[in-house]
Image 1 (cartoon, protein in one colour):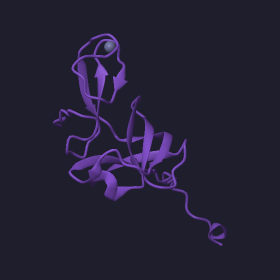
Image 2 (tube, protein in one colour; image 1 turned 30 degrees about the vertical axis):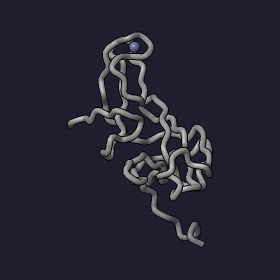
Image 3 (cartoon, helix red, strand yellow; image 1 turned 90 degrees about the vertical axis):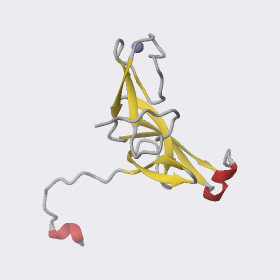
Length: 134
Ligand SMILES: [Zn+2]
């Protein structure tokens, strides 16, 4: 799999979340860097599954850029991604701190952004019992 090099904190136009790991100290982060911010080691890029736990969420009523005004109000979330780094993205309404979330992607103007939604409960394989339907 070819891993795109992103020059900013969003997706670089592809539906992928890419994180970096220091080859020396193994720290992980989201923002693209040429060297480890802790020890200066070389970095390896990896794709993320985009699943994690919501750490914080807020509503933006006054967008920082004119091209985002059409989307306001919108939700911004900070997510602890399961691979061991934190990132921000847009998010569905109704999410709360501690919720399990999964990233999809949405186009806002000319930019493709990560968009977090509640992760559906995993299927257990247990059949539904009749009394649970009433
Ligand atoms: Zn390092």
